Each structure stands twice: as structure tokens, then as C-alpha cells.
Length: 228
Image 1: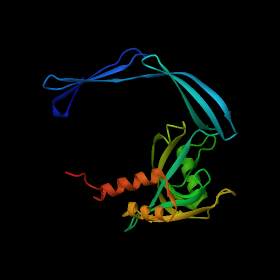
Image 2: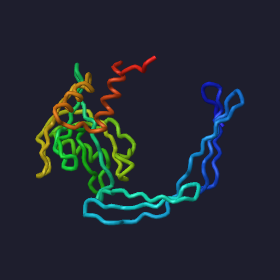
Image 3: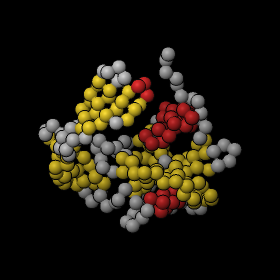
Image 4: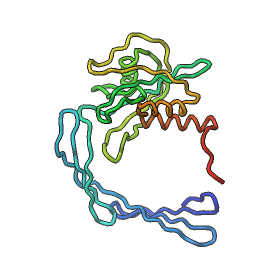
């Protein structure tokens, strides 16, 4: 049981594994709002079809009420996960190092953080520095490694680590033979407005980059206030 703001007591009753979780919110005035949150139990995970790089799978899960649901999803094969590199340079006007490249699934160029897959035996730090060097030619120092985050949890079990890198110096880029990557420098200040302009030019903005820009704008006091 825990007390939250507004004189509310939050009481969580956790039942057996296959049973629903009951969350009761008890108001100071005696009124009670009860919310039932169903737990899920994985029953099956079946491979349907695929290629050496991607497979289509189906999971069967049982809800807390006993009903079952089938969920088809994609899995990237041959890698443990992926990294996105939040690479920045200091100075009077802090800047981000991004990349622009054509992405066949969406049929457009996309502006995004440098990114790539982990090779066998690599750590997130090693993969981030390698991908940064290959795609942009820049070398840096790892500042922070974020948690594993799902890239699109409704359609794939792929996870990504955001790795922050402080840039130190540049060398020659070495992208894969089939990659056409253009490094792009953008100032952190005013990033959201600049991305909006780039989107109007026909270049798509990656979701992680856009989320970062919105957060940066809010910290700068540029977020739109809610109507009173």
C-alpha cells in the first residue's frame, strides 16, 4: 500500500500467476476506484517463415481471464541487438552528429542517429564506436550507455541501446559497400524547428531523433503550454 498525492491510497493485490492483478485506488473520502490489469502468460512462440536476416514468428499468450491471443511479430536474425549513437561535440554551440540515408522499407531518405547492429561478442559500447567511425569517420569517448529499449514493440522484439558519445576527432569514414550515408551536423538549440523544416523538404525524421528534439525543446522552454 502506498500514499500518493491528493489523499489517495494505492493498494495493489497481486494474485496467482495466471490471475488478474487488481489495483485499487482508495480515496480519502471513502470512494474506491478499482482497475483490473490482466497479466499475461506466454504459451507458445513459433517460427513461421523467414530469411537469413529476418523471420516472421507468432506468439500465443494467455490472458489472466483464461482467454488466448495470437500475435504475429518480426525478429531480426543473426544479432543480439542494435545501438543508436547520440554523438555530440561541445563548444559555444553544442552540435549533434547525425546521418542521412535512404531506407528502402519507407522508400525515403531518413535523418537519424548513427546506428547499427551488434556483431557477435560485441558490447554496446564497442558497437557504438565502430558504427560511428564507419558511418561518419568520427572517433569519440563513450559517456553513457542507456538501457535496452524496444524499437517498435507492437511488431518486433528488437531492442536498441542509446549510447552517448563525446566526439574527439575525425578520421576516414568506412561505410559498407551498399550504404550511401551523408553525415549531418545540427545545433542542439532550435533542433525541433530545424527538423520540422527538413521534414518539409521530404526527408523523414527518425522517431528517436524526433523524441530527443521534443525533449530538448521542452527543456529550452519551447514546449507548447496546455490551454487553461
